[in-house]
Image 1: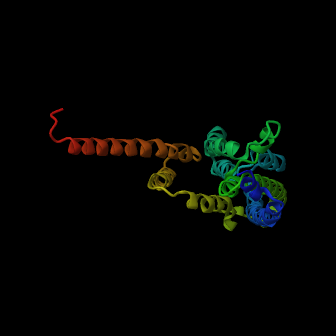
Image 2 (image 1 turned 135 degrees about the horizontal axis):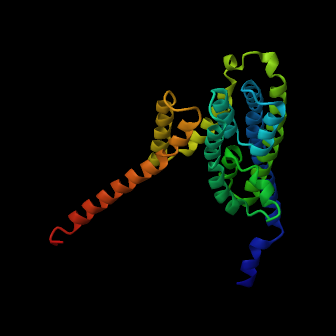
Image 3 (image 1 turned 45 degrees about the vertical axis):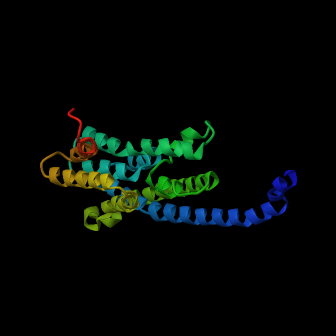
Length: 259
């Protein structure tokens, strides 16, 4: 038995696994670079939009350096450009960015990074790094995907933000270019494949309807806050539906009892 157990641990095993690991690592790096570069270039759109909404170059660059979550950044400058209250705009951006905290709960278990690195890694917990990291089959691949995506996207996003803010004047009317739709479009493209269950799709659809319906009647930034109510509403209705179903099943399974 001892000889049979020792066979799989012979010298041939590392040779067979090495090329496979290298091939897997190369595929993860390729995918991570593709996402990082594609999304990082849309930082230019944010720089232009932010400068067009009245923010200074320093404020624009600080948002990308410190906030670094594209959808929230666009929500903030979009609300300000529409004449919304700064506090309301900041609140809308904040609640939109809360999703990253939930990403962090999952990624912290998957990556299992040393404590010293967790505060730094937290800055890179966003839609794109989560989308690249979660599908990876091993912790090693997940760490590579997270690191390469985060580093590429952070560097390129901030560089293109600076370029966009500096070149905003040369573009003239930024609204005519429609650049403010670039990051939300990327966000939707990443989010759509994750909506697998009926509950998730209904929640997203209700949130969209709330935003579209309330845009004409509420101040800028407020519809985003109200759309968060879609989640508890759908969960409540889903829970009631399950309770009713369970009661029907229980009643049918015990027809002879008079309870």
